[in-house]
Image (cartoon, rainbow over the protein chains, first blue to last red):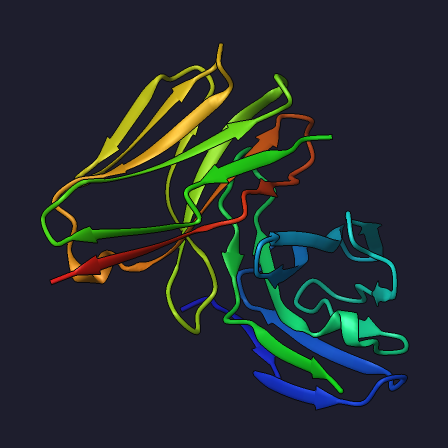
Length: 113
Length: 113
């Protein structure tokens, strides 16, 4: 069955370190998204991609970057981790057809100390 | 841009009771409204959606209603069961040709046996 997997599931890092969270999907979806989930804020869009070599900023993109070198992967990089980036991060994908559903991974819990 | 408000933030009901979660949106151009259910330790999963040309949609024990004039939509769960306990997110999307969902802040539903 097709799926979307995130790794690692849990990560603890120190302030100032570079961190990369992995996202891999086997749906062959064009669209991929990164969200962060914080209490009281719901799910907020960080970056998104509509295909290979395409990346776009979401509403909370500062301090994050993504790259899309193939269809399956959209890694999220925190250039210099900050305590404010402690959160649960979710990757999602969709086919791109009108109103197609998002398929989410199970998340990565990141703690920045 | 679009803003989605969701209420209540927490909802406790007895098994067999009904539960209602309400959302309002700000942008009248939004025309697609999905609902996602998130179980503990997992990513959100689409449970039902509605488009702006429809006022109500049902799927077994769950239903969604949409009032375009008032710009609000609601999730109704009847005959609640303990396995309905989860966090529920509403979302809104404009039909701009690009898939960008704006999520509400979530409702934690607890169904007690």
